[in-house]
Image (cartoon, rainbow, N blue to C red; front, side):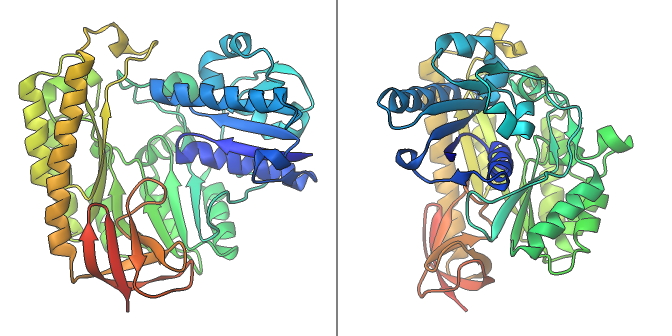
Length: 426
């Protein structure tokens, strides 16, 4: 069988796609890179918010149209949208050949031989994948250390899509990282819905720091990157570990969502504005060159003009290197769904205002960066990313002369505009 994969959503979803694709290849099937070459299209969906649900439905409709035209023989659908809507999705798209849950990805070759919904429950534990391949560049890879979430934020669908928090055993994480290193991966990005809760389910307490210490002992390890660190679990000990080694990029993705205490409380976030500021100040003190990435939600139910103005002042003051701005999406099943909603026009206007604030921040950062030297990883001969840029989500740089893809080196910023910089390799 020749199969074509469409992987939607976050890096955590991408790792699932990489794992089940590798299983199929190991069983003798062939992965192709256009639907016109394929016998079967496999869509790994996202179902986190309304926009991702819309995108997934559109991709399913396009794939089924190709099937109706005889371009492909079968269409299979898996991922978060399936977990969220299950039988409803089967009724909406009856011509899907196989509709299967995230758990069924572990036996994908057997699963794809069946028709209809295949919906075993989520796995109770995570383990080292039997097979893994990269669907992106070979020098960079995601390593999922946990899945699910126990934080129960009022706006979030993840707990009932991905289930409770489940850590991968430490020895399996280390073995997977070692295998990646042996196969030439230079940048390993650690991911989970909450990386900083790692191990709490398996070992009775958070073990993220011991995990990093074990990973740093791997011979030939390139760089580690940390995504999705929750502010109330980012400790001084963690910051000092990052500051003390060049094998962890001095980059922390720390989703904050807001800064105003009334909004944070309604969101059911487990920290307040004072704790957030204290954590950020600590990181900037312990890691002077730290690059911080965050996300904010505007227009959450009950967000007042005062709350929003506080958020704007906060963004201007703390100068995040990379920042995502999202208008609040009302999602069924969440606590916030029943709250009094803010008009769409207000949410849209606030998002635009916050983006404008961040644009001015980036202009200031670029002025300071021009002429400085930073570490860079080359994604191609003439483009790549600084240590400040995570794959797929942040900015990029171009080089004044060609370099070898996959290398990590120092380069000088010669020009900068927005999230794009031009750099001279040294």
